[in-house]
Length: 184
Length: 184
DNA sequence: CTCATGTGAGACATTGATGTCTCAATTCAA
DNA sequence: TTGAATTGAGACATCAATGTCTCACATGAG
Image (tube, rainbow over all chains, first blue to last red; front, top):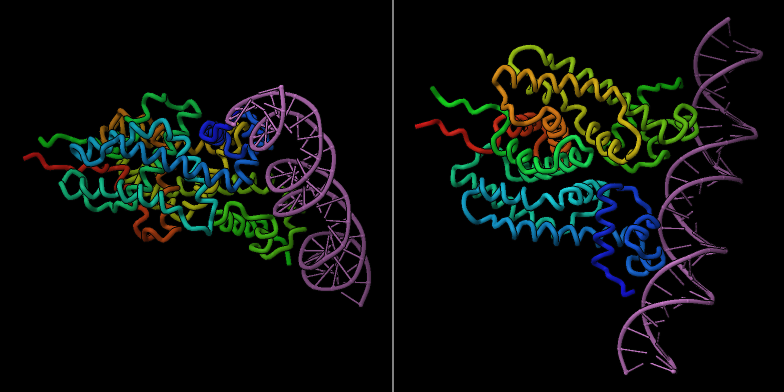
């Protein structure tokens, strides 16, 4: 059987999203290959994680492309972005915590490119008057990742329904908790 | 030198909040004791983490007490809660991810007691008409933790100023991103 | 002071995961 | 078909962290 790199990475991403401490054995088994083969193609856990990081970046890039952040209102674009992120939410959550553990090493620049695009969306919304201007795009990006991770987590635990994913995040992030009382 | 259990735990919490993968040696050194002594009082990393979990619970309980969730408007109470959480934000973030890694084991019931109190705050706000009712308290709690973790993280990285902590979280969570346009 | 107790330092064993190797079996291309 | 390349399986080594000792030393209560 020919080695399917992409398939292996996706299986690894899937498993690690559910069990971040999975061993190489478990990952290999989940991908349907032997540990030897896994190690031949990804020399060590670090290499595997880095390959997964690239996969995650590619996927998130596709998500951002698919959301067409420049089209329509910034609000609509954000909703599209969140909706498109649903399939990769757990994986993103995994990569986020993994990146935090890397401590010293600087962040892969690929993430920064994506962040710039998302930041541009927030800026666009602020300049068009849709979004408030007293929350910095830097914070909004991190908050978005945080909410995506939190939503992925609650869904994984069965605390909330998967179909509510987008509404949960955008409902809170866009509208906020306070009720909009129509001025009398 | 007499063994100061609380001091050791606080040092461990402080270190692990910054470096989640710190070893027992590093933790002992950070606490100013030997690894032998550390192991005498906390037999293994698991025991230490569990003790830290209890410390975190105690601290969060104090935070909740201090915030007087039943006083005044729910909005004000939430702001007080977030403000009071600032000193323990990084530690909470650490414990959150740690809990996620525990996989199988059920959550310590102490957290549930705290969550019930916070959920009650959200419910109170919803019943009083301050908060929207289409976001479940379960989600709001997780979202709050997620935002606290995200804020702690950005501050730790120097991306945002510590003094903005409360405003960042409450600004987004209460008001939302969309500008409140006064009806013309 | 004296002794019991707890501590620090370090040596050593253990453990779990990972890295490395070999070899038979399989696959694929020529 | 043949042969080169790759895989699976497992044995074995390595490594980092942890667990477990011992013992000299310090501390504090009596």
